[in-house]
Length: 131
Image 1 (tube, rainbow, N blue to C red):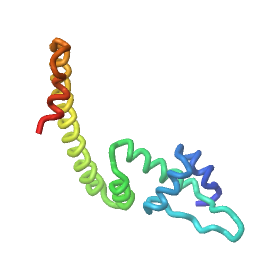
Image 2 (image 1 turned 120 degrees about the vertical axis):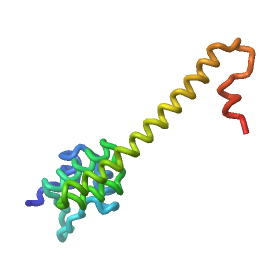
Image 3 (image 1 turned 60 degrees about the vertical axis):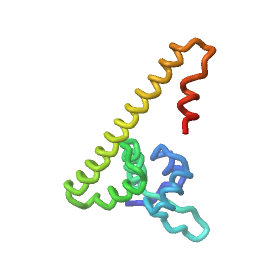
Image 4 (image 1 turned 45 degrees about the horizontal axis):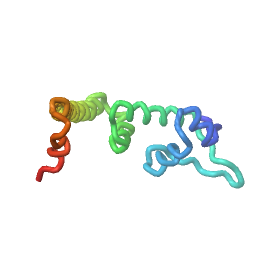
């Protein structure tokens, strides 16, 4: 695992910003290589793969703490990783149900506005002002 990428080349190879790399280092998701005397830190291609792993996991809805757990499971059994993914899937399904309910409620309010005469108070504002 030869370290030959500068932080800017690592960011470019992984499709993220330099600040993202630094943030992942602060969150202990990515090791910060030692800085040679008078030189720049060098990163490996493996570290670029790790950053892409993190981004893919985030795209699936995993929070960075959960990504950290996934990274520790890299060498564990698939059942441990599956259990984490199932928990995330359940949370996503709950969010989808909540979003569907919000969609329905807001849609009903918009329909009430459409049915109004324009002079009456806005039903959306009325609902939001209720105690």
